[in-house]
Length: 177
Image (tube, rainbow, N blue to C red; front, side, top):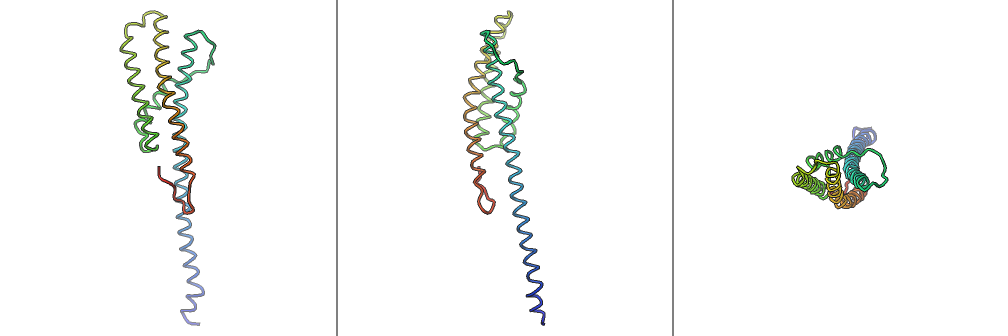
């Protein structure tokens, strides 16, 4: 047996095996990283949508309280939800699709603008309990309207982004958002 036959019989299959294993591992690791990234992204989508829903709940509680209607006495997280929306409006560009991020920014801007206007217009009007309750109702109705308007868009875009991520080809490449 000469060296050529030895190489052909023993060494070539080993080299091909190592090369195949290398590319297989590289492909699997890349796909794993993409899936982990999408999982983290999906958690962020859920956090933002939950914050929007929490504000709707808060608005409904305040409205029901004002009109003496029965309501679920579960504590709503008004300040925390506003903070989540503001946080993702600041750092969300690196996490979300452009459409989703833009809606968060628009909602955050609208919330800040509305809260500022309501606070400025009724600065001295909150001296009685009735005036304070009316101020709370105006605030709740305005915030509820802004959030409802943006929440439906966020849910639609999150569904679209989720569907795009599921369209993974044979080689692990997915459609870019």
